Length: 291
Image 1 (cartoon, rainbow, N blue to C red):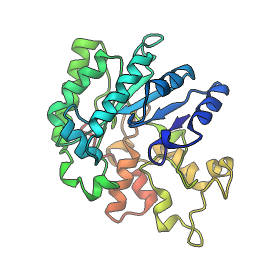
Image 2: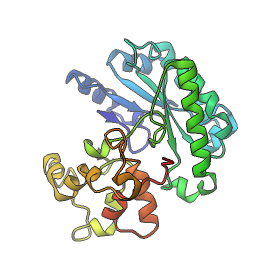
Image 3: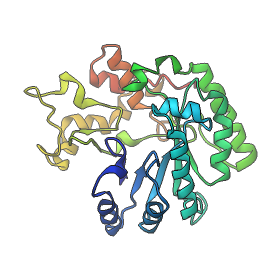
């Protein structure tokens, strides 16, 4: 169960109770945190309760990290939090491939020259490198549009990282997936619930914000109005779970469909920004792919 928050989840007053409850059900809590509030004591609590943690590290340069985070001093705080997680033992996997710590970093023009260094840092510390591509939504669309990478720049760094993994770390992976070294198939199996109770396929697929999907002016797929079972079985979310069967362009006839359906959140954001209706936007070909 991923606890990603409508912001920083560790700010939630009942955060520890929530984690302990998830753990008591023998479900693994996966925490997405900027690690700014990650004290040694909190890191120890999360380790004890079988949690996995996805931190944040967009840059090793303080001035770049602070700019991308939108707050001066953010770099120092999140690096200290990451250090506390390492001290707690999160960099010591129980077995091969059983990593409990990751860092999310978004490739863009400001950190392009650092990507290889960050990748080595992650691999050498048993940290899963969750490298994503800047998605044109929210602040990224409003303030960071000029930081988006070109398709050629993305292709070049992905192939370089694949070469590094093969040469130094014994990993081999499909270079076309939206998350570097890892495909994302969450539209086929998961539900994302935001802070208001609205349900989406994933965080950037903001179906609840589109007027075409409102009924009587309100988005109906909300846990305060419908059960998760009703939402899961609805026509809209049945369509979403079968999106791999209706994908367009290169994605539609790709031989790697079992590993990758492209980034549906990115396709949705690009489509909506171009005036395409939400159902068509969801099935558009992934513009990040260079296959």
